[in-house]
Image 1: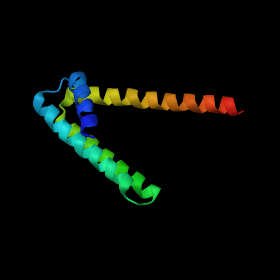
Image 2: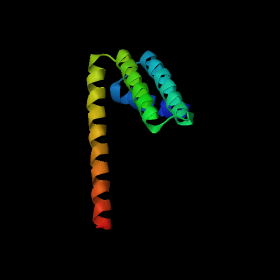
Image 3: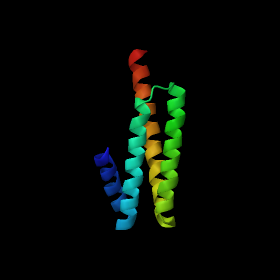
Length: 104
């Protein structure tokens, strides 16, 4: 968990030109995020409750990240997240098409 947060901070530090203080704050936010996400899977709640809680934790993460970044960094972060989202959607669509092609 800690290593995953460190890797993400290092990538964001370069990509967003974070200063050392921002990197430390971001590392704390990400460590807390990954800790909360791992605890979600240990709780024996319904899938719907887990999904809602994961969304709340993710929204809190994004809010705290935005508090750390300045305007230019926020803009760059949002562009990166949109590209990442598009890539996930494309990958999912491609897998679905391949799967349906193979099973049809």
